[in-house]
Structures are given as C-alpha cells and as structure tokens.
Amino acid sequence: MATLVSINVGLPKDIAWQGRVVHTAVWKTPVKGRVMVRRLNIDGDGQGDLGGHGGEHRAVMVYQLDSYRYWQAFLHRSSLEFGSFGENFTVDGLADDEVCIGDRYRIGDALLEVTQPRVTCYRVGIRMNHPQMASLLVSHRRPGFYFRVIEEGMVGAGDAIVKEHSADGLAVSVVDGLLYLPGHSREQLERAVHMPALSEGWRQAFSAMLEAGPQQQGNVGLTGAPSAPPAWNGFRNVRVSATHQESALVRSFTVEAVDGEALPAPRGGQFMVVRMTPPLPRRPILRSYSISDGSTTGRYRFSVKRDVGEGSQYLHDQVRDGDVLAISAPRGTFCLDDGCRPLVFWSAGIGITPVLAMLHELAARSDMSSRAVYWIYGARSGEENVFAREVDELLAHLPHARRWVGFSRPSPADHLGTQFDVEGRIDAAMVAALHIPSDALFYLCGPAGFMTAAREGLLTAGYARANILTELFGTQDALRPGIASASNAIPHPPEGETADGPVVTFVRSGLAVHWSGRYGSLLELAEACDVPVRWSCRTGVCHNCETAVIGGAVAYSTAPLDPPADGQVLICCSAPREDLQLDL
Image 1 (cartoon, one colour):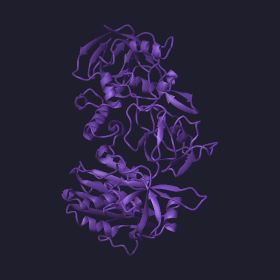
Image 2 (image 1 turned 30 degrees about the vertical axis):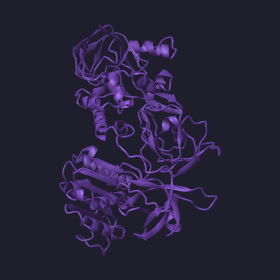
Image 3 (image 1 turned 90 degrees about the horizontal axis):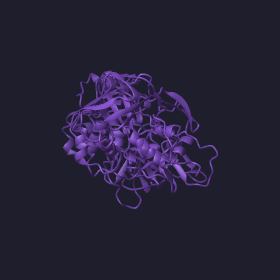
Image 4 (image 1 turned 180 degrees about the vertical axis):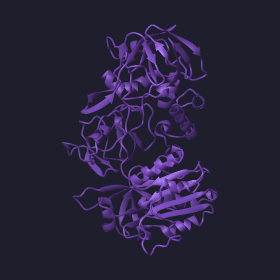
C-alpha cells in the first residue's frame, strides 16, 4: 500500500539568482505532526507565482520516493532532502505511469483527486542547482502531479494512501508527454479532452492540438496559435511600384518582386519585415509593418504613419517609386477566421491596417458574404480617417455589414451621420449597445492603451476571452515568472558589446547588436539588452520563448523536447550561426 512519507511546506521568499531576485516558494521543508489540508493549500504553505502554481487544481504537489532514488543515481547525489522537488507530499508509491487523472485517494481525513502533471518551471532547477531540471523531469517521464482537495482534513507522515476511485483516464506520465513531447496520438488527445478531472488549461491545450490536426507543425497546445511556415526564409528584393499619400501623416507603398515572380498571396492581417538600406556607414533599418492590402495578385501594400522612428521617417522622406527594398515573407497569426461566426473589426488610428487587409479578403471571398460584419473605427477627425472611401466601398460588397465610426475631435467640415457616426471615443459600452452576438470574434488593433481598455471592456460585457484577438505593433509584454522587479528600460546594446560575432537584430525593438559567446543563449542576450522576452522553463520545454525567425539560422545548445514549427525558434536554448533577425 502507498504511504505518505513526508509533508513539506514553505512560504514565498526572495532569493538571488543570476543578478536578479526571484520570489518563490519552491523551497519546501518537512514538518512534523499532523497538518490541515485545505481547498487551496496546506497550512503553512504558499506559492510565489499564482499564475503558474497554486489554485484549486494545483492545491497539493506530489512527488515519489522512487523518483528521489532515480535522481540521486542519475545526478550522482548522495542524498536529497524531502521537498527538494517543490512537492508538498513525498510519497512511497503512486508512480507517474500508474496514477491516472481523476483517480481519488484518501489520505488521513482528506480526500484528494489527481488533476494534472507538474507545470514545467525553471525554479525547480534553481532549487536543485541544476538548470536543466525542468527538461529532465519531462524527458525522463518523472514529472510528479497535483491533487485537488475534494474533502479537507488532517494528514500526517505515515498515513496510508487508499484509492477510493479509479478513473478511466490517462496516466500522469502519458498526459505530460502528450503536451510536452512529440508524437501526439489523436486517440489520446480525444481522451484527454474529455477527462473532467483534468484542469481546464490542459484540456484547452489538447483541444487546440486536436483542432490543428496532425499536419500542424510545432506545438499548438503550448503556443496557442497555429501558423503556416513562411513562404520564404530571409529577405526578398522588391521594387516600389507605387506610393500614395493617404493623409498628411500616412503614406502607402505598393511593392512587387524584382525577379518578376509574383509574391505569394498573404492572409489578411499578416505583417512583414521591411529592410531599408541607407547609405554607409549607417546600418540597415528593419521594421515590421502590417500588410494593408494583399488582394492584388503578386503585390503587397503596406501603409506607414510618420512618427519619430527612424524607419517611418526614412520611408516618408527617402523612398520613391522605383526604389528597391527587401521584405520578409508575410507572418503572423492575427488572421481572418474561416468559420461563419460574426466578425467585429475594431481599430483606432494606424491600427486600421491589418483589419483593412482582412476586410479586403472578406469582400473578395464569395464564401464569406453571408457573415455578419461590424466595422468599428476611431480617429480624431475626417482628416485622419484614412482609407474611409476604400472601407465604404468594401463594406458595400458585404450585405450584412454595419459601420460605426467615431471622431474624438471632429472638425466643422466633418458631417455626423455620413462621415462619422458618433462624436467622442468609442468604448466597450457603445459597442455593447450594438447588440453584437455573444459568439462574435473581435479583432482589435491600435495603440496599447486603446487595446487594453477595449479588451477589458469587452470582458466586462461578457464576451469570452478566447474570442478577443489583438495585434500589437510594438514589443510584446514580457513574461518573467517570479522575477521580483520588472525592468522598464528601453532596449539598448549590452554592456561591453564586441564587434566580432554575428549581428542579432531584434526587429520590434529596433535594435541590432553583436552576439558574444559569453551569453548562454539568445534569451540571455535579449535580457542583457532589456528586450522584452517571454519565458518560463528556460530549457526548451514550455515554448513560451518561441519566436519567429525573420532571417538567419540558429544552433541549439540543448535540443528542444518538441521542436517548434519551421520559421520559429526557442531562444532559451539556441545561439546564432550567422546574422540573425528575430521578431522581438
């Protein structure tokens, strides 16, 4: 019979790690006597990062005595203190390949249910003083698992662990491998999706993998959005076939391939990276811009607002018809949905460009003509309502389209009811008054403040988070779990930069720097430059750091457990083999 060997608890504390402070409760130590197990926690225990740990489905972490023996041999450790793997219960028995999701066990007075495997996290590597530990736990099929508390009660070391219910579920190690390792069985994915005890986040991941199908590259369950491989790697020379001044501040550029071969059709909403080459000694300028119209065969149009940035000023002041630029293949997952649900395109300012491309695609497709479409746009005045005539012409091709345009500062020449529909800024309350169906898909693009307010307002109005899609022109929000202080520094060259290694360009940050072997990975270089990055495991497991490669190639220091799709890279465990451009 399985037995509870040790109860381990620990409260969050700050520890020094690689020049930063990590707020973590991964340090668990054994306690004596009987302890109360409650719905969300064990008395005396806590979590430092509630986004990744804790909660109803992760109330109690379990790890096995047999795995302790295994790691002691594998890592050549003479002994390991109970709690070393961040677990609350150290148990004799309950192997990961035997325990199934949904199984229920009585321990002392408490009744507990198995809900999911361990969440991969770099902090167990800190605790074990082994940076690769998060990857090893998965690849060696020894993750451990979480309990949900069905009945609260007192437990103590030495208590027998009695199974009270056997679920028709998958084993913990199978579920863990299904998400983090390649070779996803459709039969097992379908079983996992329908296991009611499995926590919602894991079931959503498996649903995404099922929907993407076996042909999908990469791990959609971890990245959250399927993407097709780019049409080409690196940059392709294009000639500016036409320019057009859309307004005092917005200029459009239409490009076609120099080699005469038609550019492949993009998806509405995608972006591309434009490389401009000013005279030496200036470095090339790389900037990403949404395609505002890809409906003309073989040509792309992108539209740029003049601002203080080097890229926009160069395009406005220097680029003319006939000039040659270089572009990357179209990229991005902010794309038009192929289903039949109502569509809401809500943008502000120059954020109109990706949704305008979607509108072009929608108007050109006969199979989309029956969809309900809501076009919502905010500008200061008619002078800044770029593409107004173009939008109205496209909407006229869609019989179930409705327009709602707001001017925050209309001029005397602007006519309410014809040029615009509401005076002031459009907010979620106004949008809710349009009685948009609850299953509608919202596409939001504009300034960061606008998108934050719009998203929060729509959530408050009851629309599902999964139905609210956003596109961000600038850098993404950083994800650095457990790091006690966030850096708001503007991206900059690293201290002590040399001029020997390959040039790594962080395109969204507008920064190009030289690689140096003193960095363990591209992630570490990005952190040294204060480029916003997203990560969790730092060992090639979780895919939070997955980034689009615009051009160039990398080498992996540690092979990812499940490789990313073509055109993507895990920056936590890779280094450049040549000059490299990343969508960061």
